[in-house]
Image 1 (cartoon, helix red, strand yellow):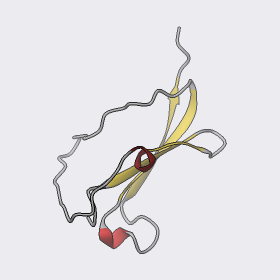
Image 2 (cartoon, one colour):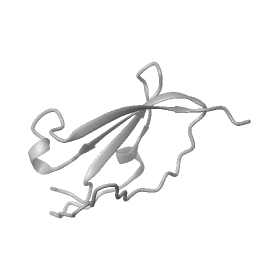
Image 3 (tube, one colour):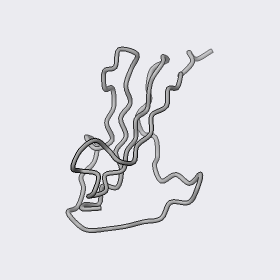
Image 4 (tube, helix red, strand yellow):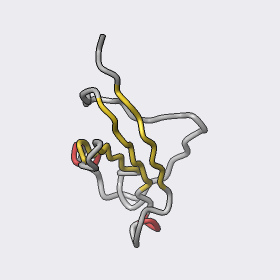
Length: 85
């Protein structure tokens, strides 16, 4: 990784509009770094509450070899937040 940012995460609403982008909420150091993430392990804390609705999460690694084009290591998954009862 070419900075302390190792991944980015974007949340899109049903219209495809970005409602949250991790990298817009943080500052990153310009340092080389590496890390190991075990299967099922996570290294983030949710700090933004989304309203009820249907969303899509897109995540990708920001490794230096991935910066030359579309993210090389990425995933996308839809999810729903139900209304509070």
